[in-house]
Amino acid sequence: MLKVEERQGGVVVYGLDIDLKNTFECGQCFRWNAEPDGSYTGVAYGKALNVSEIGDGMLYLKDTSKKDLEDTWYYYFDMDKDYSSIAEALKGDEILDKAMRMGRGIRILRQDPWECLISFIISANNRIPQIKRVVENICRSYGDPVDYMGRTYYTFPGPERLAAVDEETLKETRCGFRASYIIEAARMVQQGFDLKAIYEMDIDEARSRLKEIPGVGDKVADCILLFAYGKTQAFPVDVWVKKVLTQLYGFKDSNIDRIRRFAESKFGDYAGYAQQYLFYYMREKAM
DNA sequence: ACCCAGGGTGACG
DNA sequence: CGTCACCATGGG
Image 1 (tube, rainbow, N blue to C red):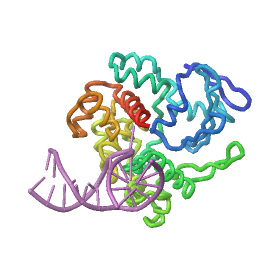
Image 2 (cartoon, rainbow, N blue to C red):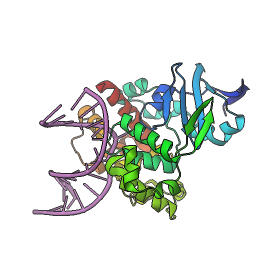
Image 3 (spheres, chains in turn cyan, brown, purple):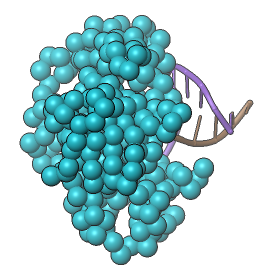
Image 4 (cartoon, helix red, strand yellow):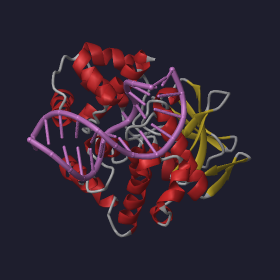
């Protein structure tokens, strides 16, 4: 258990291994933005939050109650998870060691499955800044306003909202050809597709269930399993990870399913963490 | 003008 | 089973 202390209307958490920039800009989430002072502001689970690193392992959650921390942020940041044991388990691979040094302080967040589902449907054949833009447009058009620190933020709209939007109107958010996928996904969830039930499934059953939703293939499903359901064995294979495995690990096979199984056998239960470090490493290296 | 992005789908062998 | 054009959008 971490030490928590209320301070100046906010909450300070001590002893948390986190780097906000690496965590929020590693491509797992799309709703956090850097402020001029280096802090980050975002919205999750219907709540707005500003967070900053105020010292070694000290995280300050601004204008937030201890109750919000316990109800939402403790889970969202996965504060129980001990990352030193993950690093220990993944040690010994030179490429991954270098990637872990670069991605120091990345935490895999535990996002809302519904928001994660739609966000990664949007991610298909798209770029991160554009994904962020579309998600933001959707929230501004269909979400609920939240006042926080003198500004207005918007929640991610529920399935019943998006199910009621027609395709041409939704395209005003610049989501492009993914509009029909988003609307159909919303209708399925609204009509009883049980996103919560997936928490309890083993990874293969969970993946095939998610793939029943249009716009969800192997890669998108694995992102949702990793970033929302906490299934850390999941190893999403996108163009960057493919580059890592072919160029750095010498794996000569373009079949996504075989790449994924190779990684799962190589990195085990922590494959998802390895994936995120490697993805971040490859992207930063290319830029 | 061309290529590509945290891909998925459907058509075709 | 594998391959491939296509999808909408914006940036290089």
